[in-house]
Length: 202
Length: 235
Image 1 (cartoon, helix red, strand yellow):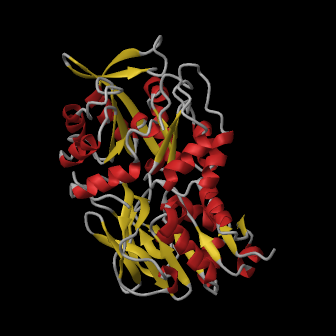
Image 2 (tube, rainbow over the protein chains, first blue to last red):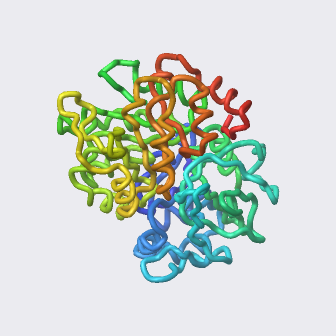
Protein backbone atom coordinates (compact mmCIF):
# COMPACT_ATOMS: atom_id res chain seq x y z
CA UNK A 1 0.00 0.00 0.00
CA UNK A 2 1.25 3.48 -0.84
CA UNK A 3 2.05 5.78 2.03
CA UNK A 4 -0.54 8.50 2.74
CA UNK A 5 1.24 10.42 5.44
CA UNK A 6 4.50 10.57 7.37
CA UNK A 7 4.14 11.42 11.06
CA UNK A 8 7.22 13.20 12.34
CA UNK A 9 8.40 11.51 15.53
CA UNK A 10 8.75 14.54 17.76
CA UNK A 11 9.64 12.33 20.71
CA UNK A 12 6.64 12.94 22.93
CA UNK A 13 4.17 10.35 24.04
CA UNK A 14 0.64 10.34 22.62
CA UNK A 15 1.55 9.42 19.06
CA UNK A 16 -0.57 6.30 19.49
CA UNK A 17 -3.87 8.18 19.42
CA UNK A 18 -2.94 9.88 16.15
CA UNK A 19 -1.83 6.59 14.60
CA UNK A 20 -5.12 4.98 15.64
CA UNK A 21 -7.16 7.88 14.25
CA UNK A 22 -5.43 7.55 10.85
CA UNK A 23 -5.94 3.80 11.00
CA UNK A 24 -9.68 4.33 11.50
CA UNK A 25 -9.59 6.37 8.27
CA UNK A 26 -7.73 3.51 6.50
CA UNK A 27 -4.73 5.77 5.93
CA UNK A 28 -1.24 4.35 5.62
CA UNK A 29 0.98 6.21 8.06
CA UNK A 30 4.54 5.86 9.24
CA UNK A 31 6.13 7.43 12.32
CA UNK A 32 9.62 8.56 11.44
CA UNK A 33 12.48 11.08 11.66
CA UNK A 34 14.02 9.82 8.40
CA UNK A 35 14.66 12.74 6.02
CA UNK A 36 14.17 10.76 2.80
CA UNK A 37 10.92 9.24 4.02
CA UNK A 38 9.60 12.66 5.10
CA UNK A 39 10.71 14.39 1.88
CA UNK A 40 9.01 11.79 -0.28
CA UNK A 41 5.78 11.44 1.71
CA UNK A 42 2.68 12.88 0.03
CA UNK A 43 1.71 14.55 3.32
CA UNK A 44 3.35 15.22 6.65
CA UNK A 45 1.93 15.45 10.17
CA UNK A 46 3.84 17.28 12.88
CA UNK A 47 2.38 16.30 16.26
CA UNK A 48 3.79 17.51 19.52
CA UNK A 49 3.22 17.10 23.22
CA UNK A 50 5.43 18.57 25.91
CA UNK A 51 7.24 21.89 25.87
CA UNK A 52 8.30 23.98 22.87
CA UNK A 53 11.94 24.02 24.03
CA UNK A 54 12.17 20.24 24.32
CA UNK A 55 10.38 19.67 21.03
CA UNK A 56 12.63 22.12 19.13
CA UNK A 57 15.71 20.54 20.70
CA UNK A 58 14.58 17.11 19.53
CA UNK A 59 13.75 18.34 16.02
CA UNK A 60 17.11 20.13 15.80
CA UNK A 61 19.00 17.05 16.98
CA UNK A 62 17.49 15.19 14.00
CA UNK A 63 18.15 18.08 11.60
CA UNK A 64 14.41 18.51 11.13
CA UNK A 65 14.39 22.20 12.07
CA UNK A 66 16.09 22.78 8.70
CA UNK A 67 14.17 20.17 6.71
CA UNK A 68 10.60 21.02 7.76
CA UNK A 69 10.49 24.65 6.49
CA UNK A 70 11.69 23.41 3.07
CA UNK A 71 8.91 20.86 2.64
CA UNK A 72 6.54 21.52 -0.27
CA UNK A 73 3.83 18.89 0.33
CA UNK A 74 0.83 19.52 2.63
CA UNK A 75 1.88 19.56 6.29
CA UNK A 76 -0.40 19.70 9.33
CA UNK A 77 0.96 20.65 12.74
CA UNK A 78 -1.13 19.48 15.68
CA UNK A 79 -1.25 21.23 19.09
CA UNK A 80 2.38 21.98 19.97
CA UNK A 81 3.19 20.98 16.39
CA UNK A 82 1.10 23.93 15.19
CA UNK A 83 2.78 26.30 17.65
CA UNK A 84 6.21 25.23 16.38
CA UNK A 85 5.30 26.61 12.93
CA UNK A 86 5.50 30.15 14.35
CA UNK A 87 8.60 32.34 14.77
CA UNK A 88 8.92 32.01 18.52
CA UNK A 89 7.17 30.71 21.62
CA UNK A 90 7.10 32.28 25.05
CA UNK A 91 7.44 28.73 26.39
CA UNK A 92 11.13 28.28 27.14
CA UNK A 93 13.51 27.49 29.98
CA UNK A 94 15.24 30.87 29.67
CA UNK A 95 13.33 33.30 27.52
CA UNK A 96 11.59 32.62 24.22
CA UNK A 97 12.13 29.46 22.22
CA UNK A 98 13.01 29.98 18.58
CA UNK A 99 10.66 27.84 16.51
CA UNK A 100 10.44 26.93 12.81
CA UNK A 101 9.73 30.47 11.56
CA UNK A 102 7.20 29.41 8.92
CA UNK A 103 4.33 31.57 10.17
CA UNK A 104 5.06 35.06 11.54
CA UNK A 105 4.19 35.66 15.18
CA UNK A 106 4.87 34.69 18.76
CA UNK A 107 3.06 31.98 20.70
CA UNK A 108 2.22 33.30 24.19
CA UNK A 109 1.08 31.90 27.54
CA UNK A 110 -2.69 31.99 27.97
CA UNK A 111 -3.85 34.29 30.77
CA UNK A 112 -5.46 32.29 33.61
CA UNK A 113 -8.52 33.60 35.42
CA UNK A 114 -11.05 32.04 37.80
CA UNK A 115 -13.46 31.44 34.90
CA UNK A 116 -10.71 30.28 32.57
CA UNK A 117 -8.24 28.01 34.35
CA UNK A 118 -5.07 27.10 32.43
CA UNK A 119 -4.24 24.58 30.95
CA UNK A 120 -7.25 25.04 28.74
CA UNK A 121 -8.69 21.54 28.61
CA UNK A 122 -12.00 20.96 27.00
CA UNK A 123 -14.32 21.10 24.04
CA UNK A 124 -14.73 24.36 22.16
CA UNK A 125 -16.26 25.54 18.91
CA UNK A 126 -14.41 27.22 16.08
CA UNK A 127 -15.22 30.47 14.30
CA UNK A 128 -14.10 30.08 10.73
CA UNK A 129 -12.55 33.26 9.31
CA UNK A 130 -11.20 31.87 6.01
CA UNK A 131 -12.55 28.94 4.03
CA UNK A 132 -10.08 26.15 3.38
CA UNK A 133 -10.23 22.56 2.11
CA UNK A 134 -9.06 21.47 5.59
CA UNK A 135 -12.30 22.84 7.07
CA UNK A 136 -14.62 21.55 4.34
CA UNK A 137 -17.93 20.42 5.81
CA UNK A 138 -17.02 21.59 9.31
CA UNK A 139 -19.45 24.04 10.83
CA UNK A 140 -19.07 26.53 13.64
CA UNK A 141 -21.52 24.46 15.74
CA UNK A 142 -19.11 21.55 16.13
CA UNK A 143 -16.78 21.03 19.07
CA UNK A 144 -13.10 20.16 19.10
CA UNK A 145 -10.93 18.99 22.01
CA UNK A 146 -8.24 21.41 23.21
CA UNK A 147 -5.41 20.82 25.70
CA UNK A 148 -2.88 23.65 25.91
CA UNK A 149 -1.38 26.42 28.06
CA UNK A 150 0.09 28.50 25.21
CA UNK A 151 -1.72 29.90 22.20
CA UNK A 152 -0.99 31.52 18.86
CA UNK A 153 -2.27 35.02 18.10
CA UNK A 154 -5.03 35.76 15.63
CA UNK A 155 -3.61 37.12 12.39
CA UNK A 156 -3.54 37.00 8.63
CA UNK A 157 -2.78 33.30 8.75
CA UNK A 158 -5.76 32.34 10.91
CA UNK A 159 -8.32 30.09 9.25
CA UNK A 160 -10.39 29.62 12.40
CA UNK A 161 -10.31 31.15 15.85
CA UNK A 162 -11.53 30.05 19.27
CA UNK A 163 -12.41 32.01 22.37
CA UNK A 164 -11.13 31.02 25.81
CA UNK A 165 -10.42 34.02 28.02
CA UNK A 166 -9.56 35.80 24.76
CA UNK A 167 -9.34 34.85 21.10
CA UNK A 168 -6.56 32.71 19.69
CA UNK A 169 -5.81 30.89 16.44
CA UNK A 170 -7.39 27.44 16.34
CA UNK A 171 -6.48 26.64 12.73
CA UNK A 172 -3.76 28.38 10.71
CA UNK A 173 -2.30 28.17 7.23
CA UNK A 174 0.57 29.57 5.28
CA UNK A 175 0.98 28.04 1.81
CA UNK A 176 1.32 24.25 2.23
CA UNK A 177 1.73 24.51 6.01
CA UNK A 178 -1.35 24.17 8.17
CA UNK A 179 -1.86 23.76 11.88
CA UNK A 180 -4.60 22.93 14.37
CA UNK A 181 -4.36 23.88 18.03
CA UNK A 182 -6.89 21.20 19.06
CA UNK A 183 -6.44 17.43 18.82
CA UNK A 184 -8.40 16.18 15.78
CA UNK A 185 -7.51 12.61 16.77
CA UNK A 186 -9.48 13.11 20.00
CA UNK A 187 -12.25 15.34 18.64
CA UNK A 188 -14.81 12.67 17.78
CA UNK A 189 -16.52 12.91 14.38
CA UNK A 190 -15.58 16.53 13.54
CA UNK A 191 -11.94 15.70 14.23
CA UNK A 192 -12.08 12.65 11.97
CA UNK A 193 -13.63 14.87 9.30
CA UNK A 194 -10.72 17.32 9.53
CA UNK A 195 -8.14 14.53 9.27
CA UNK A 196 -10.02 13.02 6.32
CA UNK A 197 -9.99 16.46 4.67
CA UNK A 198 -6.24 16.70 5.20
CA UNK A 199 -5.72 13.28 3.62
CA UNK A 200 -7.46 14.56 0.47
CA UNK A 201 -5.26 17.65 0.12
CA UNK A 202 -2.50 17.23 -2.46
CA UNK B 1 -15.60 4.86 34.51
CA UNK B 2 -15.26 4.09 38.12
CA UNK B 3 -15.35 0.50 39.24
CA UNK B 4 -16.36 0.45 42.85
CA UNK B 5 -17.16 -2.41 45.15
CA UNK B 6 -15.61 -4.66 42.54
CA UNK B 7 -18.78 -4.68 40.52
CA UNK B 8 -18.32 -5.95 37.03
CA UNK B 9 -20.21 -3.46 34.93
CA UNK B 10 -19.35 -4.98 31.61
CA UNK B 11 -16.59 -5.39 29.14
CA UNK B 12 -14.35 -2.31 29.10
CA UNK B 13 -14.23 -2.09 25.33
CA UNK B 14 -17.99 -2.36 24.96
CA UNK B 15 -18.56 0.30 27.59
CA UNK B 16 -15.97 2.60 26.03
CA UNK B 17 -17.73 2.39 22.69
CA UNK B 18 -21.14 2.86 24.25
CA UNK B 19 -20.07 6.06 26.00
CA UNK B 20 -18.26 7.27 22.89
CA UNK B 21 -21.44 6.85 20.87
CA UNK B 22 -23.42 8.68 23.57
CA UNK B 23 -21.12 11.71 23.23
CA UNK B 24 -19.37 11.44 26.59
CA UNK B 25 -16.75 14.20 26.59
CA UNK B 26 -14.03 12.21 28.30
CA UNK B 27 -13.60 8.83 29.96
CA UNK B 28 -11.64 8.00 33.09
CA UNK B 29 -10.63 4.40 33.71
CA UNK B 30 -9.99 3.66 37.36
CA UNK B 31 -8.27 0.56 38.60
CA UNK B 32 -8.96 1.30 42.23
CA UNK B 33 -7.47 -1.95 43.45
CA UNK B 34 -4.09 -1.23 41.84
CA UNK B 35 -2.70 0.98 44.60
CA UNK B 36 -3.78 -0.96 47.69
CA UNK B 37 -2.51 -4.20 46.15
CA UNK B 38 0.73 -2.51 45.13
CA UNK B 39 0.41 -3.52 41.51
CA UNK B 40 0.16 -1.54 38.31
CA UNK B 41 -2.73 -1.54 35.92
CA UNK B 42 -2.60 -4.16 33.20
CA UNK B 43 -1.70 -2.18 30.07
CA UNK B 44 -3.05 -4.46 27.35
CA UNK B 45 -6.57 -3.06 27.46
CA UNK B 46 -5.36 0.57 27.14
CA UNK B 47 -4.17 0.07 23.57
CA UNK B 48 -7.39 -1.74 22.70
CA UNK B 49 -9.44 1.12 24.12
CA UNK B 50 -7.25 3.73 22.35
CA UNK B 51 -7.92 2.04 19.04
CA UNK B 52 -11.68 2.56 19.26
CA UNK B 53 -11.95 5.82 21.21
CA UNK B 54 -11.95 9.16 19.41
CA UNK B 55 -12.42 11.17 22.60
CA UNK B 56 -9.84 11.80 25.32
CA UNK B 57 -9.35 9.30 28.11
CA UNK B 58 -7.44 9.18 31.34
CA UNK B 59 -6.07 6.18 33.21
CA UNK B 60 -5.89 6.09 37.00
CA UNK B 61 -4.52 3.52 39.40
CA UNK B 62 -1.11 2.10 40.16
CA UNK B 63 0.94 4.79 38.41
CA UNK B 64 3.95 5.16 40.69
CA UNK B 65 6.73 6.24 38.36
CA UNK B 66 7.57 8.12 35.18
CA UNK B 67 7.99 4.71 33.52
CA UNK B 68 4.49 3.60 34.58
CA UNK B 69 3.03 6.82 33.16
CA UNK B 70 5.04 6.59 29.96
CA UNK B 71 3.70 3.10 29.25
CA UNK B 72 0.12 4.29 29.75
CA UNK B 73 0.56 7.41 27.58
CA UNK B 74 2.39 5.51 24.85
CA UNK B 75 -0.48 3.04 24.75
CA UNK B 76 -2.75 5.93 23.77
CA UNK B 77 -4.16 7.53 26.93
CA UNK B 78 -4.20 11.36 27.04
CA UNK B 79 -3.66 11.70 30.75
CA UNK B 80 -2.62 9.78 33.82
CA UNK B 81 -4.22 10.33 37.18
CA UNK B 82 -2.33 9.77 40.42
CA UNK B 83 -3.80 9.60 43.90
CA UNK B 84 -2.33 7.35 46.62
CA UNK B 85 1.17 7.20 45.04
CA UNK B 86 1.29 11.01 44.98
CA UNK B 87 0.47 11.09 48.69
CA UNK B 88 3.29 8.64 49.40
CA UNK B 89 5.71 10.47 47.10
CA UNK B 90 4.54 14.02 46.29
CA UNK B 91 7.61 14.67 44.09
CA UNK B 92 6.12 12.13 41.67
CA UNK B 93 3.85 14.97 40.47
CA UNK B 94 6.90 17.17 39.71
CA UNK B 95 8.59 14.36 37.79
CA UNK B 96 5.51 13.56 35.74
CA UNK B 97 4.87 17.24 34.91
CA UNK B 98 8.51 17.80 33.93
CA UNK B 99 8.54 14.79 31.65
CA UNK B 100 5.10 14.94 30.02
CA UNK B 101 3.80 18.45 30.72
CA UNK B 102 1.14 19.44 33.22
CA UNK B 103 -1.67 18.79 30.77
CA UNK B 104 -1.02 15.04 31.10
CA UNK B 105 -0.98 15.00 34.89
CA UNK B 106 -4.23 14.69 36.82
CA UNK B 107 -4.20 14.42 40.59
CA UNK B 108 -7.13 12.61 42.15
CA UNK B 109 -8.03 13.54 45.70
CA UNK B 110 -10.40 11.62 47.96
CA UNK B 111 -11.57 14.10 50.54
CA UNK B 112 -13.77 13.79 53.59
CA UNK B 113 -15.50 16.56 55.52
CA UNK B 114 -14.29 16.71 59.12
CA UNK B 115 -15.13 18.99 62.05
CA UNK B 116 -11.94 20.95 61.24
CA UNK B 117 -12.53 21.22 57.49
CA UNK B 118 -11.63 18.72 54.78
CA UNK B 119 -9.19 15.86 55.07
CA UNK B 120 -7.43 13.77 52.41
CA UNK B 121 -7.95 9.99 52.46
CA UNK B 122 -5.64 7.37 51.01
CA UNK B 123 -6.13 3.82 49.71
CA UNK B 124 -9.88 4.34 49.40
CA UNK B 125 -10.03 1.44 46.92
CA UNK B 126 -9.71 -1.04 49.78
CA UNK B 127 -12.12 -0.53 52.70
CA UNK B 128 -9.72 -2.34 55.08
CA UNK B 129 -6.82 0.00 54.25
CA UNK B 130 -8.64 3.28 53.56
CA UNK B 131 -7.29 5.85 56.00
CA UNK B 132 -7.26 9.53 56.87
CA UNK B 133 -3.84 10.93 55.93
CA UNK B 134 -4.35 13.92 58.28
CA UNK B 135 -3.52 16.13 55.34
CA UNK B 136 -5.68 19.20 54.97
CA UNK B 137 -7.39 19.01 51.57
CA UNK B 138 -6.97 22.70 50.74
CA UNK B 139 -3.25 22.54 51.57
CA UNK B 140 -2.87 19.47 49.38
CA UNK B 141 -4.75 21.16 46.52
CA UNK B 142 -2.30 24.09 46.71
CA UNK B 143 0.70 21.78 46.87
CA UNK B 144 -0.24 19.58 43.91
CA UNK B 145 -0.76 22.69 41.74
CA UNK B 146 2.62 24.07 42.78
CA UNK B 147 4.15 20.71 41.86
CA UNK B 148 2.64 20.83 38.37
CA UNK B 149 -0.74 19.11 38.41
CA UNK B 150 -2.72 20.15 35.32
CA UNK B 151 -6.12 19.01 36.57
CA UNK B 152 -7.64 17.99 39.88
CA UNK B 153 -10.40 15.45 40.34
CA UNK B 154 -11.96 15.97 43.74
CA UNK B 155 -13.93 13.00 44.99
CA UNK B 156 -16.06 14.15 47.89
CA UNK B 157 -16.42 11.00 49.98
CA UNK B 158 -19.36 12.13 52.09
CA UNK B 159 -21.52 12.52 48.99
CA UNK B 160 -20.02 9.62 47.02
CA UNK B 161 -22.42 6.77 46.40
CA UNK B 162 -25.28 8.63 48.09
CA UNK B 163 -26.59 10.17 44.88
CA UNK B 164 -27.88 13.28 46.60
CA UNK B 165 -25.87 15.74 44.59
CA UNK B 166 -22.32 17.00 44.38
CA UNK B 167 -20.76 18.46 47.54
CA UNK B 168 -21.08 22.08 46.42
CA UNK B 169 -19.71 23.49 49.69
CA UNK B 170 -16.48 21.55 49.52
CA UNK B 171 -16.10 21.97 45.76
CA UNK B 172 -16.58 25.74 45.99
CA UNK B 173 -13.93 25.92 48.71
CA UNK B 174 -11.48 24.04 46.51
CA UNK B 175 -12.51 25.92 43.35
CA UNK B 176 -11.63 29.20 45.05
CA UNK B 177 -7.96 28.19 45.34
CA UNK B 178 -7.72 26.16 42.14
CA UNK B 179 -5.96 27.65 39.10
CA UNK B 180 -6.26 24.47 37.03
CA UNK B 181 -9.42 22.70 35.84
CA UNK B 182 -11.36 21.09 38.69
CA UNK B 183 -13.46 18.00 38.06
CA UNK B 184 -16.24 17.21 40.54
CA UNK B 185 -16.76 13.59 41.56
CA UNK B 186 -19.13 11.88 43.96
CA UNK B 187 -22.81 12.38 44.49
CA UNK B 188 -24.44 12.61 41.07
CA UNK B 189 -27.87 11.00 41.21
CA UNK B 190 -30.07 13.14 38.98
CA UNK B 191 -29.67 15.51 36.02
CA UNK B 192 -30.46 18.44 38.36
CA UNK B 193 -27.30 17.67 40.33
CA UNK B 194 -25.17 18.39 37.26
CA UNK B 195 -27.07 21.62 36.59
CA UNK B 196 -26.66 22.70 40.23
CA UNK B 197 -22.91 22.11 40.00
CA UNK B 198 -22.44 24.18 36.86
CA UNK B 199 -24.79 26.96 37.92
CA UNK B 200 -22.85 27.28 41.18
CA UNK B 201 -19.62 27.36 39.13
CA UNK B 202 -18.25 24.92 41.71
CA UNK B 203 -16.28 22.91 39.12
CA UNK B 204 -15.21 22.96 35.49
CA UNK B 205 -16.43 19.46 34.68
CA UNK B 206 -18.52 16.73 36.25
CA UNK B 207 -17.55 13.10 36.62
CA UNK B 208 -20.07 10.38 37.32
CA UNK B 209 -19.99 6.63 37.20
CA UNK B 210 -22.82 4.60 38.68
CA UNK B 211 -25.67 6.68 37.27
CA UNK B 212 -24.30 6.11 33.79
CA UNK B 213 -23.37 2.45 34.30
CA UNK B 214 -26.80 1.55 35.64
CA UNK B 215 -28.53 3.52 32.93
CA UNK B 216 -30.24 5.70 35.54
CA UNK B 217 -29.13 8.70 33.47
CA UNK B 218 -28.45 8.49 29.75
CA UNK B 219 -25.77 10.94 28.63
CA UNK B 220 -27.76 12.29 25.64
CA UNK B 221 -30.75 12.98 27.92
CA UNK B 222 -28.48 14.67 30.45
CA UNK B 223 -27.01 16.94 27.77
CA UNK B 224 -30.46 17.85 26.47
CA UNK B 225 -31.51 18.73 30.01
CA UNK B 226 -28.40 20.85 30.67
CA UNK B 227 -28.97 22.70 27.39
CA UNK B 228 -32.51 23.48 28.49
CA UNK B 229 -30.94 24.96 31.64
CA UNK B 230 -28.79 27.25 29.45
CA UNK B 231 -25.60 25.36 30.26
CA UNK B 232 -23.31 24.97 27.27
CA UNK B 233 -22.64 21.33 26.43
CA UNK B 234 -21.16 19.56 23.45
CA UNK B 235 -23.82 17.74 21.45
